[in-house]
Image 1 (cartoon, one colour):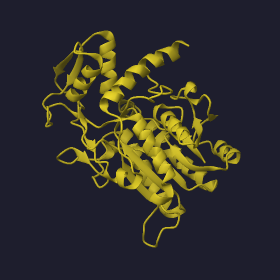
Image 2 (cartoon, rainbow, N blue to C red):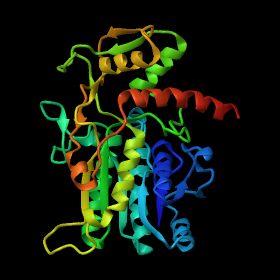
Image 3 (cartoon, rainbow, N blue to C red):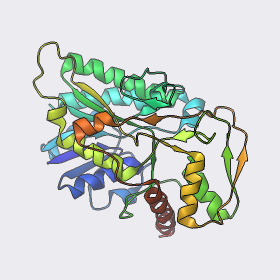
Image 4 (cartoon, one colour):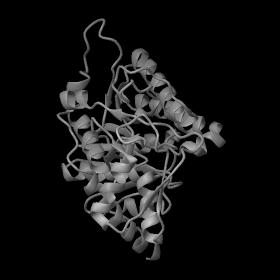
Length: 337
C-alpha cells in the first residue's frame, strides 16, 4: 500500500510519512520545498512541485497506481502572516486544494485525508470544542481551512470524493527518533519561546494571567506530533470503515470530521512547570499583561477519534518538551552540515 502525502517535507507531513513507514505503508511525498526541508525527503519517494500542477499529479499516479489514499498537509499555517497577506493564504489553502481535488478525481482516486485545524471552532463555556461546536474562525488562516473543508464537502456530495478531516490545535514535540521536527529555528508558539528563553538564559514571559481558567493563564491543547501522525495512519487504514465506498441513500456526502486532542488542555503556567521538570528549577518565568489579540484558548474533546480510529494520545507534555529540546540540537547540526 502507498499513500500520497502533500506537504510531506514539512513538520507535520514528514512525521506522518515516518509513521506510515513504520506501519509498512510506503509514503510518496509531494512538496514544493518552499517551507519544507530537503533533508526530510531523504530515502523516500519524492516529487518536487506544486499540488496545483495537474501534469505532475498525473505523473505521480501513473508512476504509482497503487496509491490508495491522499493525505493533504500542504498549506500555509502562520496566523500573523495570514493577517498581513490573506490573498496568499486563500490562494494556497483554498484554490490549490480545489485544484488537488480535481486532480485526484481525474485520476480515479476518491480517498482524501485533510489536515485541518480545530481553531475554526467557537469554544464552549468550559473552553472545550467538539465536532458539533459552532464554527467561528477568527483569522484568514482558520477561515481558509474552513472554506477548504466546505468546498471539499460540496465536491464529495456532487462528485463522490470521500474526505476525512482531522482537526487539531497545537502540535509540539518531534519525531521521537529525531528524523524530523520543526523546520524553523524561531517557532512562535509558547514552547518554542520557552526553549529560546532557556537557551538565552532569560526569563520566559507569561502574557496574560487573569483569564477565566484554573490558574489564570491561557489554555492550549498541546499534542505531540507523533500522536497526530498516528491518527493519520489510523484514518488511512480504517478509511473505508469510517466512510464506506457505498453509502446508503440519504446518508449525506462522504465527509467526516474527527477532532484530535488531549481532552483537557494545558495552561501556560502548567507548561512552564512541566518545562522546569525537564530542564531544572533554574528556569525562570515572569508574568505580564495579555497582548492585543491574545485569546483564552480552547481544548479538544477527542471522544470521536477514539470511537472511529481507536486513537488517543500516548505521549505526555514532558515527552514533547524533551523531544523538542533534542530536536533543537539536532536541527542545529543539520543546519551546519
